[in-house]
Length: 456
Image 1 (spheres, helix red, strand yellow):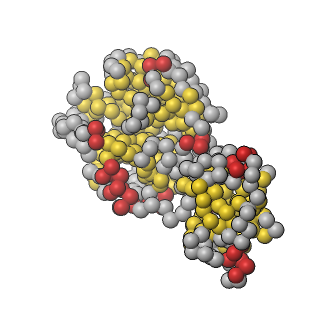
Image 2 (spheres, one colour):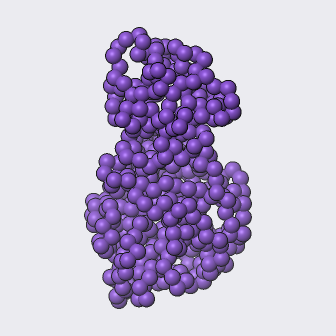
Image 3 (cartoon, one colour):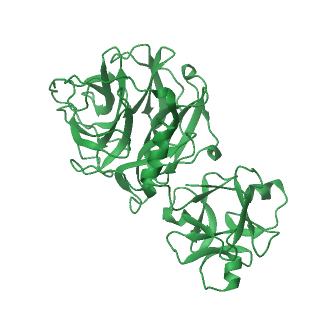
């Protein structure tokens, strides 16, 4: 969430709601080999690229993400505010999925909903049973809903942020077996100060962990119980600027834990930290070279899935028809055009489509590549006096040669890419003072300037 910190709503009376018993069987998580991310999109200007439906991205390593459905929503709420924030995917005990989300469209923090959006899905390719679930009768919100299985209760705990009678946000909980009806709300975690965006890791060496946002930082609490009121804050807070929306993820291939968060702005930037021991409560920032968020993504949730589910999601929703290119030595910057000049700039920026490219067969040699602009599809990156600019293809052989490059192993890192000029074969695309040009490359710095990651 990105709440207005001056807004404080107060609790009213809460009504008890009866439970319906429909328990499932445990899911087979041992087969998981990939990850799915849920998110909504928001741009700096809150204009094009902001979409408050459910978006999905997939990853095989938990760090490099590929948005599905061309970064468009796969489903959108049809009730309440007609939009969502903070989506979360839980794989239930029977192996199917439930999607939860805040009932809020955009940034109208004055909108108050006692409901959360709910969808069911067997495979995250179709979504059924859409409804809103009412969690309380209080004069406050239900922000950033998440859920986990409480084996001792034989129920799911649905946690969310709401304001208590003292006027600050706390983490609330309702219990449910079916996400159709729920128990009366209880305070799950109230350390005496404002907390939102709770995220859980349950049963890690006998300990349960709750991470949350406190004063623009991500902080952890822990308990050997899942009982409301049993958690105690313990960790050192981490942040990169103002940071919110903590998401804990366990690597499927190592003992590493990742903690994701995004900045407290529209079109927030994701940052990630890692730890080999949740009990230590300390985190080390990951190099931004190692991870890439889906473009415009905000407040993500990450769930592990099987390799078959990964393949089926890509088959259903499709891979992007475009790429973004990240700089090796300035990994917060992406190749873009601005006033038709090729350069690298720090993400986010408007328009985000300035950084989207179709890598098409080279105009002068199909074994090479040319960079076709997504938002100016008649224009391509070409060199002119060794500087790269975005020009309309005039159909000449000179233009074709200037706009064609050979993709090679990265000069600074062979897992990345470099691009050699077709008609100036001793020169590579590089940045200099953030402007793109083609130059001979020899020094270590020049090799880094000429190395890029081709992703999304």
